[in-house]
Image (cartoon, rainbow, N blue to C red):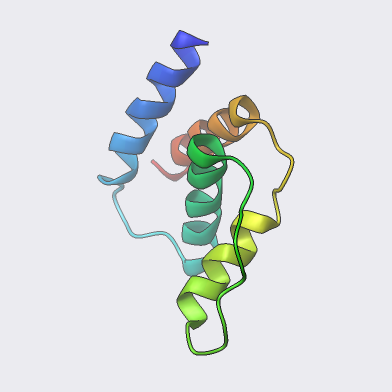
Amino acid sequence: MADLKARFETAVAESKQLPEKPDNMTLLKIYALYKQATAGDAEGKRPGFGDMVGRAKWDAWNAIKGQSADEAMQEYIDLIESLK
């Protein structure tokens, strides 16, 4: 578990130094996996139409509801590795 957390934190740091900016769908996936790994399932109300970015982020996060933190961390690590 400690090893997974350390690798996750390394991947988070590496995500800020990718050679090129990922497309929007990939960015949403990165966001959703990070939130799921660190905060658990999405809570609260879905943002309204006036906040399209917030709404897209919430939708991406809510789409992986029920995924364990460990699974989300591993998927995040794998995704960042694939983008390097």
